[in-house]
Image (cartoon, rainbow, N blue to C red; front, top):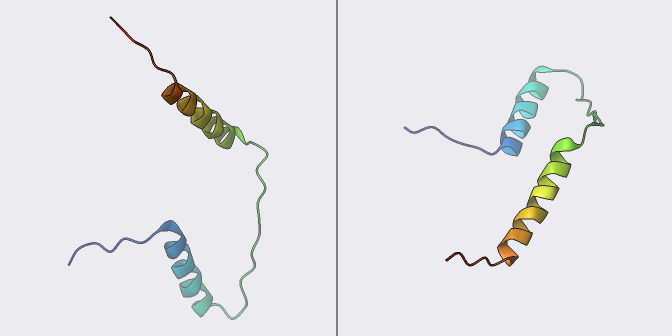
Length: 61
């Protein structure tokens, strides 16, 4: 039988269910804010650059 793959979210939910089954308390959700937003900014700028590059036509002879 092959390896069963699941998305990150599905795996996270499955892990929470398994861990909650062993615990007698309700899980606590915490959000950890990140001050370093370099990666999202980089990806946003990369998308803009790629979109601009698709609009330009260069003829090389």
